[in-house]
Image 1 (cartoon, rainbow, N blue to C red):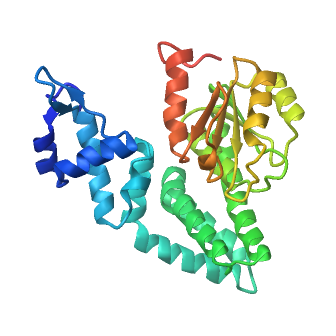
Image 2 (cartoon, rainbow, N blue to C red; image 1 turned 60 degrees about the vertical axis):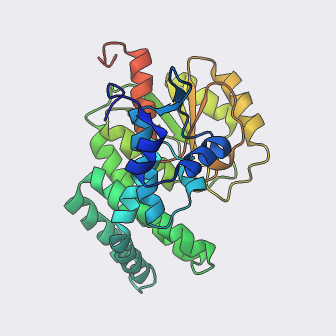
Length: 308
C-alpha cells in the first residue's frame, strides 16, 4: 500500500486494525504516532503508510510485545521483530545446538556447525535466520548469568571466523564498491560480532567494508578514514559499553572526520543514546544499515551508478 491510496478516517482505521478510537488518540498524544493530518472538516485522516505500520504493530502486540516498544521501531525494526516471531522455534533449536557445542569437549564442532549453516542457508539468510536471533538469545543467556566468559569467547570466535571468511569471499568481487565503510569500535568496546554482521550485510549490497577490529583510538579512526577515503565510519556499541562520554566523543570524532564522512552507530548500546551530533546516524537494527546505504547512494550517486 502506498501514499497514492486515499487517506483513512479514524473510525475506518479502528475497524481495520482492531484498535479503538480512544487508543489511537492516546498513542498520538503519548508517543507522537500515529500522526494524522486534518481534512477540510478538521477531522483526523491517516495516510496509508501509517495504516500499514499500525497493522504491523497490532500483529506484534497480539504476539505479546508492548506498544511502547513497538512504536519506537522504524519499518526495518518492525520487520525484524516479525521475522523473530516467525523464527522463534528455530531460534530455540539454534540456541540449544550452540550451547551444546560450546560446552562440549570439542568446541571446534561449533565452527563446523556455523559453517554448515552458512553453506545451507547462504549468507543473507544465515545472517537473518541464524546470526541475529541467535546472538540476541545468547545475550539473554549471558544476562541471566548462565554464560561464563570463556563460553562467550568460544561462541564469538567461532561465529566471527565464519563471518570473516564470508565477508572476504563476498568482498572480493566488490573491491571498488561504494560507499567505502570503515568499521571499528572505540576503546573499552571489545565486542566485534555487531561489526561483522553489518559488514556482511553491506558487502552483500556492494559496499566496500574495511574492518579495523576493536578498540581503535579516535585519532587512529580519523587517520584511517583519511588514508582510505572512507565515506562512512561505522561504530558498534554493545549493551555493556559505558555510555557516559559517548555523545561528546562522537562530536569530537565528527569534527575530526569532517562533513564529507558520515558516522553510523549501532548495537544495543547505541539505542540508549539520547542525542547525537550532526552527521551521526543511529541504526537500531543491523538491517537498518541497508536503508541508510540506499539513502547514501541516493544522495551521492544520483543516477544510482556507483562511482569508482
